[in-house]
Length: 558
Image 1 (tube, rainbow, N blue to C red):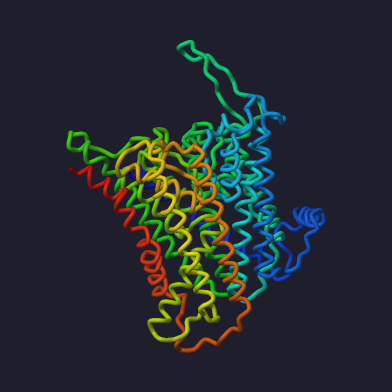
Image 2: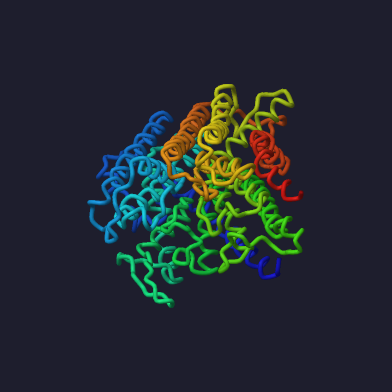
């Protein structure tokens, strides 16, 4: 790799690092103001109050059951509304290309996909949706889905700190007005300046150099792109996603997209440290996640730089450029693949199906762990869940009742966490086995890579990521319905169980720290946390990984 490649990686990660702490402090003020005036109150305060009055929202605290009920019910209502828009888009306005209404199973899959912050697309963006659907349904869900994730992470933090969980609707509104909307507006303007289209004009018909006619799709791309990346959504306006030159014109726009993907997720550990009154604990978790991220990035770059061993045997050496966007190069494409799955965004600037076997394993591993920063809000909830597991296991080894943030971890909390841990692999492995046995004709590659294709699709769905090993025949009734249910249950079961954990912790009386209390703001705890993620999380998927990408890698050395 050249010095320019290292420089591009270094600049991107340094900008993310520089922004993480100030954004985290800002978030802590928005969601835990302590009665003090909120940032941007003069401008956005009247908007908040107007929305609260319009929808009858009272700024009163909810129990964990009421919070979870409000979350699930509101999200289901939004799924139904957007499903209806998708089905009727053929007769609705703002459809200059005359796109027909979506087929029922695709509409079902798409509505759930975008509401669960997954953005799995079994259709091609520019030909599958009208402008109305893109703006009223897709962009709407691209705001409300990450806002739901932000709401739950701060409710979880409050519960762990022994505070009331808050009100879901208040958190949802403030997530949009105080965080997502202001940043997305600024980012959208920046994308327009970089050459991303923002227009309601219809598809343009042009004459090529050879004299043939070509249809050039365009639309309100910049407004979708900004919240796509900031909200860890990932769904593209165009079929090729961020490999399309209108959606990602140059290296500058590529870098901005990666910064937006990591902006909120990297700031949450600092917000957590501020909210629980232990900034060092937040820094420990940030460093632990950063170590996992750098490790994943190093493995990905190493694999892609090494190239294909079979090509080496033919005397063709060099990095793997198959499926890479030539405008961006191998380094930026590989970095993007790690960032988009570490942040559970799902946008792609290169085709993940064409990564080397071990290079493709890295995005898959990021989604299986769902803690290498993870998606907006819910990723850090998973991080805190693993931190609690680490404390529990450490307490068992020394023979004392585990404590986390001054409150005892007991059987109720650990049972709920155990359910959360079990659901994730079940939602991935069981449907994968069914697909391989009952629907092999939809898998375009035989052998080990075919297993990886199906495994990646359900891993992406369960982790609410949305990227895929393309080539899979996923626009069928089975894949639409199966991934739809996996996305739904993968999102909401863990939200409900972990809100129950937060409610249980909030109701407990704090116990004073003693000399035997296991400190969670030390480098030792950071190491135990990483070890817990790898042992408890990674080993669950080790057998299927060996049968898929690892076996495929070994066959290349024959």
